[in-house]
Image (cartoon, rainbow, N blue to C red; front, side):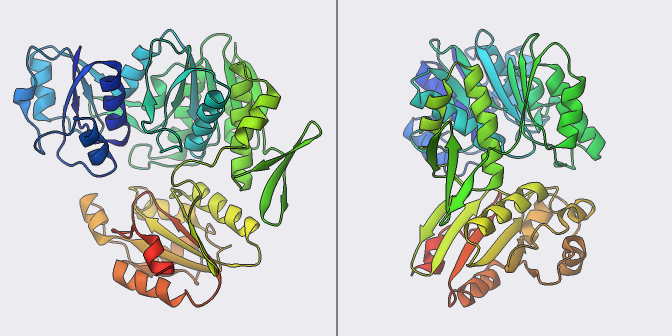
Length: 449
């Protein structure tokens, strides 16, 4: 089967392309921009397009199906050509559903935690030698490709993103998966450009829960009132509420006490202990014994950019995290402060998403960085221009965060200078962004050279 990817450079798209290539399908693709790691991974498997851009001549009678990425606009010339030739057009969520329609589908939804929970489930199933297919949005240790599709696996584990499916399908992605086991980890308003009110955003999770198969299972975070309200109204499914798994900290290390045994974890943070409980209940539903779950989760090191330890020296510890929404920001800072109560915490956050760069949404961040000893905020003017948003001023940010101690930067050079000035004192540095601080990738060079 020959499948063409329109916008092959996307995070999920390039992984799906490689997965289908490894399955034996003939894969081609196009994009108007491809960055690493997608670029290097596509090149490794011989799937990197010869030229950047859209080439409608690639779409011809030899193509059996097209998979359309969210990055491609509705007037994309390749998309138009595929329509003219009546070629079957899938979004990647549609294709994942089609490929897993005879499998037990575990779909992880929620405004925060879904990548980590999905990663935990995949890690445990692999550790327990339970074959599963999967799609997850972050790199995991021991996994090169973050999408796997096979004939043999009876289980499919999917990270259920609530963002839109494609330019021609405005449904949230997780509305297409029809889970047998669904997780909702929490609801905190995000994607203001798509869901203009919090009520509209919550409604998407209600729809998701109603799509659980009859006699399926809903695993939900019971400490979130909005999630709890949704769960109470869902019928004909098994409901499993969860909260934060009991734990204790000792000398900065996290331990679980389970059935008379102690489990030393490699992850930390209250939010991750809630994520762990969600993953546990999903794994139990998939046939994993509780003792085997704890044995496996003890070896879980976390997903890429989720409280990822970048480097550690005599005076400095450096973490990076994907946190960008208010709830993620607050939970991540709390986790680091809890683990390092006696160290100065320097929290550096980039406003990068459409929501975080929108004045109307910025008030949601009030108090989110109050636990940091030094709070640095960065935004790239070019990101505002690219998203066609009005210019932000430091004054607007100060008023929104309600924290007069926040330092605001829109010049990465000045931000680096400020970071250098903070090296003299023993500190934990926490970088939080869904971007890269305008190219500040090598954090080691700032702190350890």
